[in-house]
Image 1 (spheres, rainbow, N blue to C red):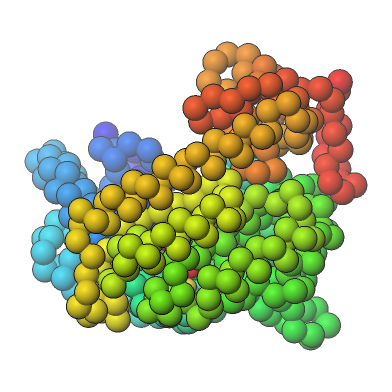
Image 2: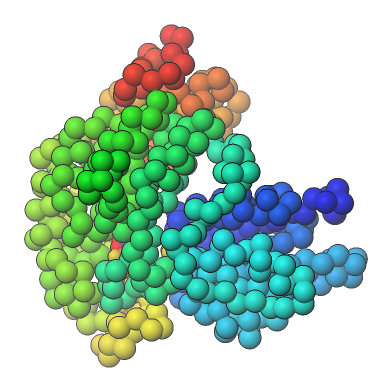
Length: 467
Ligand code: SAH
Ligand code: SF4
Ligand code: F3S
C-alpha cells in the first residue's frame, strides 16, 4: 500500500533503553519535514529504521534476525515496483557500522546515534544510489537544529514523556559499550530543555522523565551564568505550570551529591522513586568494573537519601558472572540487595562486549554458574518487589491517569512509585491526578478506587476533578 503521491511512510522499530525511545520520536520529527508520516505497520513503510542496542550480545544479534525479516518485505515490495529504504540506527550502527553494511546487503544506510540530524542528507544520498555509513560524533548539534516546523509538530504524546538532557558517558565501566557508542558526556543547555518541556506540557504531558546515560552528571549555566546541577534544573522545570511530576534516570552513585539528595526532600514534584544502579555488592568486583566506589559507599548513600526522603523507592541494575566473580562475591551482592530492599531491579548475566576492557579478562565465569546466580538474584528481587507492592495495599496514593484500562469502564494510571494502578474510571480523567485507595495486588498492577480529587503538587492550571 502506498500513500498519497507525496506522503511517504516511516516505520521505526526501537530496541534498548529509553534514550532510544526518545531518539526514535525525534527521528520521526526530523523525517516529518521530509514528508514522512509514521506508521505502525512495517509492510506499509517506504522507510524502515531499526534503532538498535549494543549493550549485550543478545540485544545486538536481534538486529540481524530482524533484518532478515525486513529483507523479505523489501523484496516483495520491489516485485510490486515499490522501493523500500532500510536503515540501521542506534548503538549497533555506531559500533558495527561497516560490518552491518558488509553483512547485510539489504541495508541502504547506517547512522549512529549522534548523527540523526544528517538523516535527510543521508536519504538523499541513498536516492542517488549511495550506501552511506555515518557515525560521526556531533552530539552538540543533535536535534538542536530541528527546524521550527518539526519542533511545533503537535504529535500526541500522551500523559508522560521522556526528555533527554544529557548523553554519552565518561565513566568507562569495564564491561560497558556506552562510552564507545554514545561518546563523551554532553549536557544540553538549560534553555533548550525548558523550551522542550514547555512544548511537551502544551501537548498534554503531565509527567516528564529526564534522561541521560549518566543523568545526574548533567550540568549547565543557569540564566544568571552560575553553574547549575541537576537539582537546580529540576527546580526550574517544576515551575512550568501544568508539569505535575518529574523523574530522572539513570544515575551513577558517584554523581549523587548532597544538593541533589536535598531536592528529593524539598521538591514535591520530584517523585519518590530513584533508579540507582550498583551492579555488584563485592568491592573486588566493583573495582574490576571500574565503578569507582565501594559497596559500603553505596549503602551509606542509600541511607542518606532515605534519611531525607523515607518513603523513597529504590531500583537498581545488577550484573552477575562478571569475570572473576567468586561465590563469595556473589553472596556479597545478595547481601547488598537484602540490605537495600528494592522496589524493582534489573539483573543481567555478564555479556562480554567487543572492545571493552573486561572482554579481555581471562577468568570468565561458566554459563551454568552465572545462570544459577541470576536465578537466585532474580528470585530475591521478585520477592522484594512483591513485598513493596503489597505494602501499598490499604494505603492511599496519588495516581496520574494515563489511559483507558484493560476493560471498558476502567482506567489505568501510575502511582508515584511507577506502579500501574487499574480502577473503575472515566477517560475524561486522563491527564489528571486523583487520590486512590489501593485495595489489591494483581500480577502486574495494583487495583483501587478513586476517593477524592487532589490538586497537583503545585498550583497549576490543571483542571480540578469533580468528586
Ligand atoms: N548508565 C547506567 C547503565 C546503562 S546500561 C549505569 O551506569 O548504571 C544498563 C544496564 O545494563 C547496566 O546498568 C548494566 O547492569 C547492564 N549492562 C551493561 N553492560 C553490560 C554487559 N556487558 N553485560 C551485562 N549487562 C550489562
Ligand atoms: Fe556504562 Fe558505566 Fe557509563 Fe553506565 S556509567 S553508561 S554502566 S560506562
Ligand atoms: Fe543500548 Fe545504546 Fe541504550 S547500547 S542501552 S541503546 S545507550
